[in-house]
Amino acid sequence: MGSLLRSIFALLLSAAILLMGHGLQYTLVPLYGVSLGWESTTIGFIGSSYFAGFVLGCLTVPKLVARVGHIRVFTVLVALTTGSMLFIGIADQFELWVIARLLMGWAMAGIYMVMESWLNEKTPTEYRGSILSIYAVITLGAICIGQLLVGFDLGYERLFMLGAALLVLGILPIGLTTSSAPNPIPNIKLSFRRIFSVSQIAMVGAFLGGFISGGFWALGPVVANSNGLEAGQVGLFMAVTLLLIRGRSLAVPIRENV
Image (cartoon, rainbow, N blue to C red; front, side, top):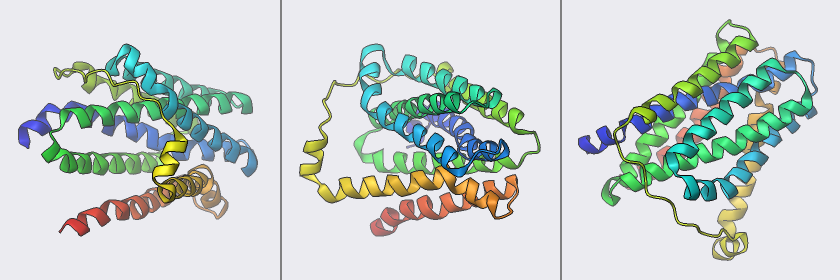
């Protein structure tokens, strides 16, 4: 187990750094929209564009990975996410925000896919549950820390720069790793009709869960701010909520296996 963790340490470290920057933008973007005087409907639409991009990324990025490989796609997607975050920080046009958030969602879907498929391939079957649990704890903790960074008194522009810096720094561990890249993924056609025929409850539950969580991520900071919470308090509210919801979902399978 120790040698296995050492072999994937660079990937886990990259995930932690990247997702701190990603967690920061989750709360920072809605709060910045509020500071510009935008209405909740406008901010909600911008949040929806992120999740629309995420869905598109799930459908299209695997083909890109199959064509050029995991590491190249990972680097390109991190660069795209970083650029999108910086564009939001320097522009206050609604249309640019929608495009930037759409691209960010598309790229983040690919980043998650690359990291998780890499872990899945490099981990033997008998250790897969343990390694994925460690990965889940790292991602959860990193995103929560990112929420708390909103409380730094740097101003919105510098906070966007901080988030972009974390995203870029997240490339370094993977870029310097001596571990071999995963094998190309097979080209498999996704059929929603087939998935629905196999498990209707799971598909409907996933849709409803995404519908609710997407609304929370898009407008949770707006609601918290409208109730008098300052930026740091909003970040803490989002982090605690994330821990309560996702932390509980992680604890259930662990408790059932005891």
